[in-house]
Every structure is written in structure tokens, then in C-alpha cells.
Picture 1 (tube, rainbow, N blue to C red):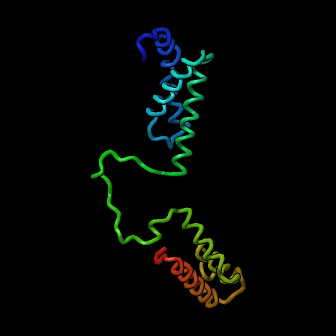
Picture 2: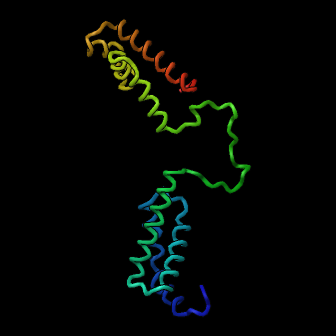
Picture 3: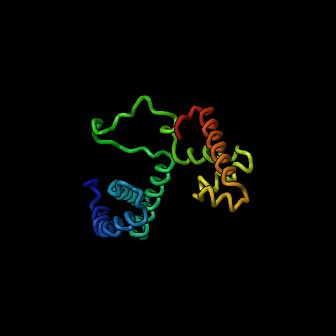
Length: 177
């Protein structure tokens, strides 16, 4: 706080700081993904201080909560795009095995997309059998009854589908899914 601006300091102490507990509660409740609420609060204070220097603020509480909400949303968006985590001590990091396969290096959404592509590339009957048995969890007998097939046919189609999916992943350099 600049010492020469005692009026702003008084305004800040009277109009802004009393809202801190409510602001922290709001941020924790509305943005549980924000790991460091303290940073959001401090940055909100800084932005309020700067805005107040430029022009009067009509409602300190409304302005404070709006600034904090926007900062929290930005953090959540940034986290969604790039989920990097800060580490205090590098010794606390677990070292990745250099021999990790391609599967370990791809995210869950990518895994789902690849699995969907692999299943989508199967012939229609085979795809239907694999989805019912492996995805929906029906027994081979239940799949056979539902589709009017012999149980042995279902078994063969599941086996064929799994081999084709494995080939699909292997062609993309993925050995274990």
C-alpha cells in the first residue's frame, strides 16, 4: 500500500477487506478446482487497488467478487487446457520410467477416442457383439440370445474383434491399452 494514499488505504480497510471471509468461502464453494484461493484473493485486491486509482468504484463488494470470479474462471480454463502442477521440491517428483509405452503418455480422452475408432473400424456384426459384451457387460449367452446367434458365434466374434482392436493399436505404436 502506498503510504501517501491514506484515503485509499482507509477505503480498502473499510470497504474491501471485510468481505474477505465471504470471498474465500465463495471461491472455495464455486471453484473447487482452484488450488490456491489465496492467490486469487491477493490478485483481486491488487486489481481493485489499481482500478480504484484510475476511477471510483461504486460497489466494492460487487467489484471484488466480479474480479475474483473472472480470475478463478481464467485459472480453471487454463487448468483445463494445460493441467500443469507446481512442485515445491524437485526431489518430491516421481521420475517417469523411460520405457513407458505410448498408452501412458496419452490422456483419458485420447484413449476413449482411440478405442472408439478401433471399435468403429470393426465389421458391423463384430462391432455389435463387442459393444454388447465388452462395453455393455452382457454375457456371451445374453448377447447370443439378444442377437439370435449361437453362443460359439458370439465367442468367435468377440475374439476376432479383440484381435482386430489389438492390431489397430499396434499399427499406431500402442502395445498395451
